[in-house]
Length: 156
Length: 388
Image 1: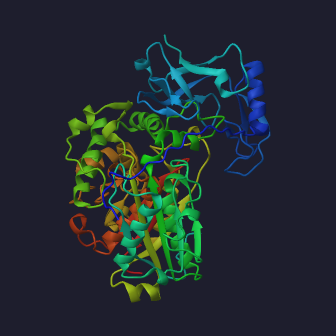
Image 2 (image 1 turned 90 degrees about the vertical axis):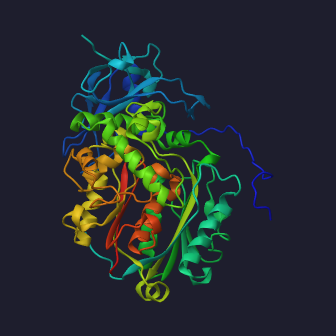
């Protein structure tokens, strides 16, 4: 057996196949409100009062079933962020994702968790922790998180 | 909750490939076989003496979803007990924990665990994006780099940790890697070089981030009776703990307060009787996907107080000649074949306890810890000891 790699083969596999995920009851309601009323909804645990966004069926801390929807508004605070500037293959498109882009975690008022999304400012270099951020919505909304284009810094 | 197993279990052997960015000379099964042979050689055991095998990797990197089918013969579990475990970044520690639990249960006397990854055969960042929720996270997240970067800004902001302090971790670990014959990246670096390396996603630069590697690791867990027969100086497993958390990145603090690691180390320390981690632990193999993570997780694992990770590296405590050397192997910053990465932490901790570290050996190791990190910020911890 040869110990050298030179004549060894490499097999390529390129194929397209699709997946279909059920969004579920909670996300379906969230995206309906987002699409129809531009509302970002969280869900409250009736026991510990934590408010979760994205919404989910149960509070992991109390194991209560979550039932109480809360409108979180469209403004929040930037908790952490980065500017992604390395090239990578986006599995959603099969092509490189456009860079650079701002990415961050937004604390919506009242929420116990943060929402991750695209973030931007008049200049990406002006992003900083603690900035007030406002959701910018798509004109033609389809009922997905992409109905929010990004969160824009509110600058003086 | 916190308790010792009723049956003593030890790690009696480890085997690793020589990890590289690409191994086109072998296919997946051949690479696994290499680590298995090395492990058996280390133990001076034959496959017949192994009661069962637990194997795993992170499947969406290579798109190979049936490693247990492909590898049963070459990994030694043909017509024998065999299981696959795949938990993302923690796959390697999940496997090690499973090996430990298998033997501790009394149902098996010797179990081999095998973790592997051939990162070069797929797309790492795309694979990690696939791990994220399709409705909420895939469009925006950019794999490990972007997630760590956004958490790192929050960590720096909270405690005043600097990029220079983080850079020291890269210098330390890739320098340590020169002493490890299996390590992938061995580099003589300066803080300046790390700071000037290409910006990937602020504040993470190229040299702040782990590489992607091809490699495999195997270990043998044995009951006390078996361990004493095959090994003069085994590494006894004192505690093995795993913790999971909420599903979304925005639910959690990966840096500054990785509560899965805090909870897992607290429980493991309780079981092992560790009161002052810095003094009571002789060496740590910490799963550090990026420089900032090592600093932050010093704090979370109780090596120092909250926000003191930067000061701890400044003081030299975690260097090879310090009070608690962290990652003598070179860590994840030097080698990252993901399904094997967390198991390499356990294997390297075992090597230290067994006094088999060669040039990377820390003197007088009685107690070592190893951690694993992965998925939606979950953590595993194992405590190993020279005495059962």
